[in-house]
Length: 545
View (cartoon, rainbow, N blue to C red):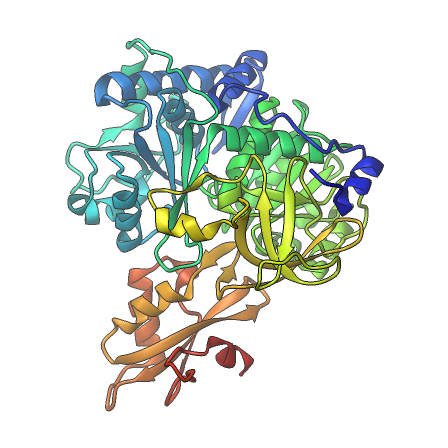
């Protein structure tokens, strides 16, 4: 790699320029080593229950045996997991990948329409679902390739039957995860030959168009990103002494790679928060855990610093606070620093990049308003509209190459042809600037994507749903700034003549079809949408209003 502006900063921070993306044969091998080395240590805690590394090892092996023997899972089969941060999540994940499966991560708040698309697109035949989300599965199961549904609750894997919502009665023949684990204990497990090129995750993301696409992430992608993050954290590398609280959802690639895979690989103690919206309970978890590491999105930090009981938490052990998923606001970082003594160290990445592309090193002691340095073995180019590299300090589309970058979108050859530059750099669709020390600042998004609490929202999808509402002639969707969620969805709507449609009617309609963060927060009726000469709706003009 040619000398880049961040190389000199690497040397100052004692960060290596390169990592070994083949440090482990597969993610299974890497996590297997951790389970043996830290067998007696607590691995995960939730709802007053604790699983040791040895118990995660045993229960995930039991689940892998069940999947292989009872459900006929073979290497490469896609298995969906749709649940909040429960102890069942790491058991399911490790069981699936030990059986050679590919995990398809699903938001448990998805609507039936969103879930159906994802299951069909990925060809999912088996899914593990939280009992509280089972009604969504029941709604669309007949239209999907699903052959088996395994339901999970908060106590699964611990031997405790903790209260959980009932399984939807339409799901005839659903298998309880607790029963599958008991049955699997009596079955033989057959280790599967895996290597770095084998698929690990299908991580669904909207990319540049409406319907979500599966970023195909390999074992090597995630091993590389784990090694990159560890190397970038020179001065406070992840260790077995760490206690991490995981409130961001594990189905989101940020929590999955950093909080789970990275910190599990070193033997850390991980406290799972199933519902961070229950702030009183969340604060109680922080008080008990006394974390050394905390990762979140800006909205989560903002909610914490505003909570009256945050002062009761002992943050004296905290050495790393990381932020990603959406821009961290300087005022939020400052309030967090006043309470905890730590700035929020911002990073940047995408589902397609496993996800971390850049992160602020430990040498940074003030909030930088940048997303830090590219992580080792990563090259970033900023390109103008003619694909020419821009000068330092100028804005251009962020294009990235590295061992953490996906091979492409699942079964989307046409999209993949345009997702990469001619020389193999992934086009992120984000616009950024690099300073002379190699720190990357995100300026804007090239596309019209809206970022709500760290989740990607794509106007095409919102508009397609809203236009189907009776009384809507056409509409256009933009992001508007919002103190709480970073951005909120605003919908401009042209009504049919004499239609009695109200703003509330349209919001209720959208809420049935889309998960909450995608549902428009503001609806404004207008006489006509601004359009170009060829009839393209000019969203920029609407934003400028």
